[in-house]
Image 1 (cartoon, rainbow, N blue to C red):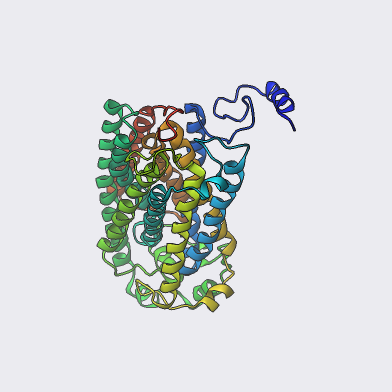
Image 2: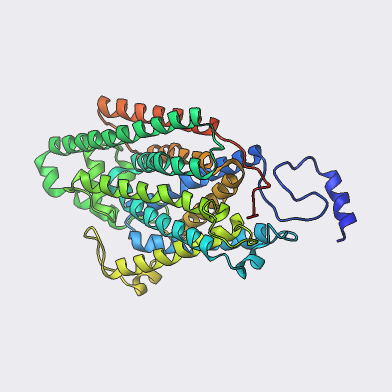
Length: 434
């Protein structure tokens, strides 16, 4: 197809303000408008809020987290490859915006290392949060980690992005996120006390038996793909429900200190707070580490390198955890992992959702500023929905827990709204080093 034919097609297309696809020729697709950036962020919000629920579901059904995370890592990396070889290769590159394959041969290693560093901390954060879900719960884990990400990461991104976000709006929002962190910790502590009270009030006979022999047969014959078990017939939030869940889940939490879950959660939050600034540095080179004339990494190339390191760290750590498990999990092996097909499709789907969610977040951040792109940290609202609907989190809890949970979510919603209102617009001309 020649340029005249392509121009004819473009004249039939309504204004594609978020794309540079239809101009004088076919160029690499980049999100450039604020509206397109917000669209990317909302789609990323759903994806990034859903994949943790899938991992939580599999852990609660008894699948070892090492097996789940290995499956997840494969499709997570596949999503990055797909984005790089599609969006990153559309049309002809320009000197300041080379295509994905052309950029692989360029001397841009300082930016590559920033991207790979971001992938390392994201992988560590995701791994920590996978274990934190079992101890703290999906809703509170996501709120605390997302809030820490914004308090630290968004503040760093604000200065890296030449302050394109409105400070008078941004930093009050950061303060709201900080309040949400403390409220989330209080929710976890209150809910742990509620569960302890439920179990203490449970009859001694049931404490010793835990589950009747009939119920044990049901648990053992559960269908991991459909999640059918005796717990499906027990009201969520009751002592019996908690006991049966503990019986079948992979990570045992009874008798463990609440500090374990909070430590894992805060560690994950600190890791998450660093990956977005690292990616920002990789694509915009604010510290001027590239040689003169070397173009900045495109978002697709940076995401590729980012995902390579994320994948490698995940594979190394989880193969290690197969043979040297943490938190008293049973040992496994590569042979056992390969034979464990129960729930594998859910884990693979989780990896795709996370991979595409991260890619969309970075595409939006390149246009609107990475501080505003961190608005996808509203993902706990999606995760909370899944936690309540699928897992019965906080059912039959105390009024104090409900009050704290409501306050946490309200403060979080306000904070996300303020964060999105602070978004600016990055100049498209600032893409390469002069």
